[in-house]
Structure formats: structure tokens, C-alpha cells
Image 1 (cartoon, rainbow, N blue to C red):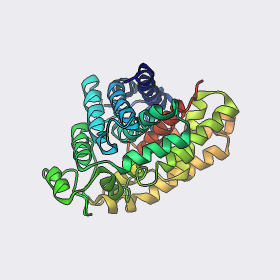
Image 2: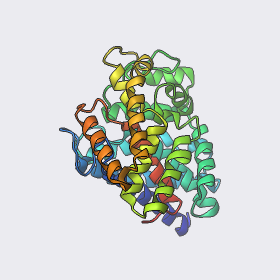
Image 3: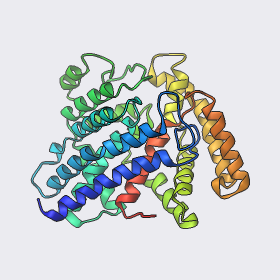
Image 4: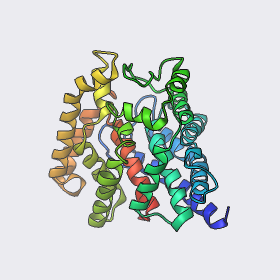
Length: 334
């Protein structure tokens, strides 16, 4: 492969690492771990370690995407699912803070492949070409990709997943891999099923709608207005949270009443919607750009922290990470 493409894939890796580290550094992103707040078993430093550790796997995925763009591999041979599993494995080797980046990996892997694909065709991507390539490669994922992602979820030690009762097998089912193969379910199909109750999964069948159409433009708008990356991250995070209630909150709240994840999210959506309304109110007060906004933001952060992780907008954190990744790939510098 040409030196130019190898360098481009190195840049994809750096963009992913920086995006992950910037996401956790955004302060105060209410309810999330950030520079001024840790959970007892998962600290700011764990997220930094994970954000750096995922880089080499991102580079490998980007290289395979580039080979796809050159016609050296079929679109179905990018191995996005394997890339997710590599990221999760590398993250686990570098910290003991539990599951820090599973949702982020599920978004970074196809974006990295798409960025490599575009690099082979035109050089540095712009948002539309990146989105087209990413969607193309997501749609062509395979059953093997699905099996690898299911294993990655198990490897990550993700907790509070609940049980599913739809056509896709339950990730907690020991025979899930066999069932995926029996039913011929690709990763694209599995994520489409999971999109019924999970905001990160919903990015797949919607062409990463929130990442490209909500988070990314919100980041650019806030950067133009403030020229401050921390303010831009926090405001884009609040914009995502205000735009779509966080499924991670809804699931954790609802699982206190039922093990069925789809029903749990339905039950918990009222609480998640209240948090979204509060995020919207903080933005209307000016967020980090006004005294009243900063006071409202601090109160919201304190309230969500006191929940002991129950009201942690974890899905929104993954979506701001993917939005940052897109922005950095497309040339954002600060």
C-alpha cells in the first residue's frame, strides 16, 4: 500500500484516540465521568487509558477499509466486527476500570473503515463522503462480524444488558454464535434489531444520523462561537442529550422492574426524557457561556452524580465521541 495511504490510516488512529480522550475530558458533561468526577470503580484515568489503547485496532480497520477502496478487498471483507473485538481486547489489557468504551467501539469501527475507504479514493474525507462510505461498509457486514461483536460484548464485561425476546439471539445466550449463524444474521441486521432499544445501535440503520446530523454540526457551531473545545464538547453533548433521551438511562431505570430490555427501556424512558428536558433547559440558559447556564449545568451534574450511575447518560457520551471522531477526521483542529 502506498505510503500516503499508510500515513492517512495513522491519522485515522490519532483522530480516534484524540476523540475518545476529548470525550471524557469534556467537563462537566452531566452524569458522566469527567475531569472533576469519578465513579468508585471507573475513573477518568481509565477512560484515558482506553482511549489510547483502542488506537492500533482502529488503524488496522482503516487499513482494511483503504484496501477495500482500492479494490483489493471486497466490502464484506473489512471485518468491522473483528475490529470491534480487537479494540475491546486492547482496552481491557490497559486498565482495570471495567467497560469504558464498548459503545464507542461500535461506532468507531465503521467510521474508521469508512475513513480508510475514502482515503484511498480522495484523501482526507469530508462529512458526506465519510458518511456514504461508512454506511456502505456497515450494510455489507457479515455473520462473522455479528459473532465477533457478540463476543466483544461478552469480553467487555458489559453489565445491565437485560434479556431480549426478538429475532436476534440474546447476547447473554451461550449459544448466541451458533444461533447467529443458523439464522444468517449479519452485524447490520443484529444492530437493526437492537436499534429498537439502544441509541448506539440505532446509529447503524439510520446512517449514523445523530453523529453526523446532530453532534457533528453542534460541535462545529459551538467551536465557531466560542473557539473553546471544552465548551464545544459540553454543548454538543447537551444538544445530543436534549435531542434524544438516553437509552442507557432508560435501560438502567427499567431493568429494576423487568429483565426484558425492550420493555425496560419503555419503562425507563419517562425518567430519561426528564433528563433530556433538563439538558435542554441548561442550553436555553446559555450553558457554559453564561453564569445562569453554568449554575444550571452544575446542578444537573450534581443531581445525576447522586444517582450512583443510574442516571448516567452513557449512550450520549458514545455519540459525542463519534461526533468528535467525525469532526477530527474532517479537519477540526483547536
